[in-house]
Image 1 (tube, rainbow, N blue to C red):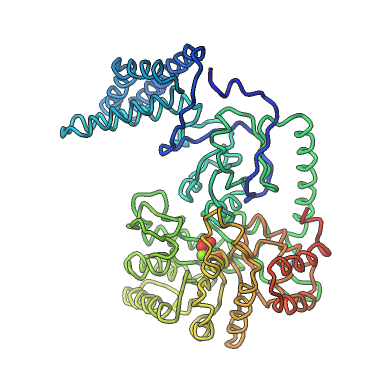
Image 2: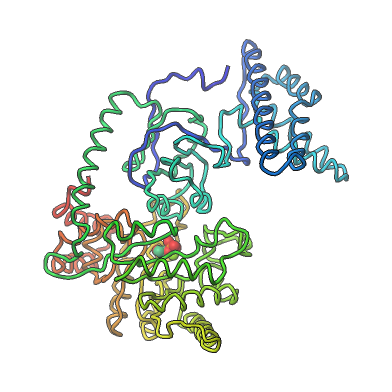
Length: 590
Ligand code: PEP
Ligand code: MG
């Protein structure tokens, strides 16, 4: 008997890290990871007949699945291409393989998925050892089919998003930013992953897609099966399997309360983000996917403070050309009017790998050929983007921002390439904006400590706290094991923000923040107090930040920041900022 069927249907609760707010209750779809190691589970002799039945049912389900795929392909592109699945059908019908699994079951009395995986692996290893191209192809067939059979035995779903047609919540070991970019917003109502962190790009995207999400829920793929009834609470990081009626009633109340707060925030959409004592803080939006553009004005943001252009390069064969990029940037600029758009040049690398670009695997990708480094190594890709930005900037509301600048030489190299682009466009008689403003992201300690030099050659600074924290405290932003060390209120981070603001002010340029700290309303008092002039957050969170700004006094924030800068303890710094936040907009924090 399948272990899952014997489970009681009582409510069960699991905890993870909440990364995107909201509540969702739906059927779970558990993604099967091909690398997943199946653990052996001893069986009683009495369990053997039901285990054999389970195996037979999985073979039949796999057969039906293959026939359905074959049918779809025949209809779409013809019988010729669909015939490759004949070989897959032969694998599910292979008597030698099936008999070996049955004998293994009798002999070892272990769960059938474990036995099957061992037998299939042995088969593949034997065939691989023979130098014959026909047999090598059979290895691929056997691997493909055995993954399907195991998926059916475990009651898990295909990773292929097209295989789903009803609303559901994804449960997966991991989702990459590329996977997340492809999620069908109409169907995916939430997701839960075993790994991940708050500032991974997958989590950042969940917030911008407004999909409730929880990460770092270790072992959850073993606990949940496709078809289970689950509720996820993206406020507290709780997954509830088989929610009881009392739980559902409590969540209905919570959802109503959150909806009331959202309605109150909607009313301030058109108002200015100005503190009670009259300091205007520019409140702009981060845009990850072109689809996010319509949310910017809808949430009352003052333009776009960070356009993450790398998402234009993901999930495609070739990088976007100049004309295609021009269209995206022009569209963003038009939608942002009368405000501006800060276009960040390509920040590929780290956890964002583009199949369309030659980004080789690296030992330490976040310390590797990422962002501006990649662009300087690949000038033709960089130039295509710069030309498109320069051309779109004729609307006069576009600024350029380089990511991960580590010092003034790098900034000069990037600017030299920008100048070449201007000259080329000029000689070709193509209209562009020669006066475009160029700023940098401050996200490395080396940029902080040379901010006085950088300020002479930049028109603005935008602090990328997601990276600045990881590089300063030496905490991998993706590693949930050390997530407790990833600390935005570490005294060093406060001091660095202050240094950057001071260096900028000395040269008359403004400093903003576009990392996730900008959206964290427990920290708004501190950031205003440190002299930050612009906050750029995921559109959906802009109304909350606006309410926070409007509720605060800049002078009180300055006093708070001055005292916080003298503290040694990050928890104490957080507590003081939180106390001020609670005093002024406690209703947003519950
Ligand atoms: C940052 O590092 O804070 C930032 C905004 O850039 P990204 O999260 O895309 O690395
Ligand atoms: Mg960054």
